[in-house]
Amino acid sequence: MQKIPMTVEGAENLRQELDHLKKVERPRIVAAIAEARAHGDLKENAEYHAAREQQGFAEGRVQDIEGKLSHAQIIDITAIEEGDKVIFGCTVNIINLETDETVTYKIVGDDESDVKANKISYQSPIARALIGKEVGDEVVVKAPSGDIEYEVDDVKHL
Image (cartoon, rainbow, N blue to C red; front, side):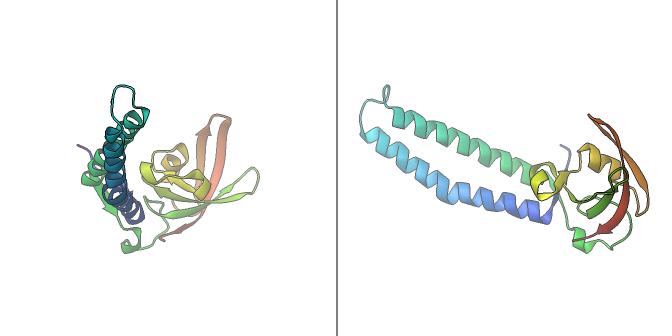
């Protein structure tokens, strides 16, 4: 199986979610199932069916997270010598050449991406166009609205 790149922060967040699912959610769901069973007939017991559905969702998420962590290639960007090249995990400032608007993005793994927090997946069109470029390079991003030109302004390893 192919390794999945992930930042240290992203791996820690997944570990915390996994810990919460195993130590908090599992016992809560098991208690809800036990309580629903005590009510009697399981065929028409909506509480029982809802609890079983929650259990299935939680167990599926546990397996998903464990799979991702087992195939993760955790990259600590702070351990890499800082340079002018855009790489996975770095924070990059880009300037839209048409509007002079500056935007800052952190290039992260798929599970960590959050556009509202300016964290974009390394597989997004913007990140794919930026990776490998250096400060001062111009980049053309193919967007649904047309090509957008950016200039790489700054690269930081945060």
